Length: 111
Length: 113
Image 1 (cartoon, rainbow over the protein chains, first blue to last red):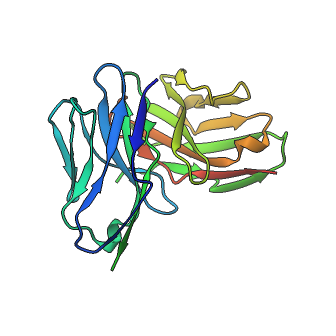
Image 2: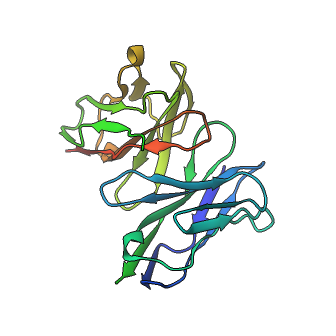
């Protein structure tokens, strides 16, 4: 079945550091790819999506580019802030109406 | 932004009893979902619901689970009977279309004792 792998379980950075969270997927066909962010006590919030190869999604300074060749959708941000501390989930949708989530990456940003 | 409301936020229930989790989805949304998250683990799809019917369900959606949305009111997840392994946070979600931006509620933490 479909799956999403996030390499980093936890990432710790200082403010203004560059962020990369790696996301790779395995799916038949041509899935849509998503990033969600979850703050403590909240449900996941949609960040952005991409639906085709080489498409870039972005929001709030975060961005990721759909790469069908490497089956990846890595999340990047040039300069993180303390308020970015949260859990980030990569997810895919491959036909139907359900999201398959990765394991999540907890980002902690030190002031 | 649009809000999905879940009631209650926390429920403690004795094993074997029935529990109903309530969700008030975004008003014009057509697709409804339940996800399960065990503490510290990933979000797992349970079921989706459209036009009054279950469209897809995962193997986590046991026979003891059921969903309904009678007359456009709350979208509910009922578990009868509950088991210890049902302890988790259950997230309700909704979307206008399938496979687009999905809005999640804050979750209901279910503890089965």
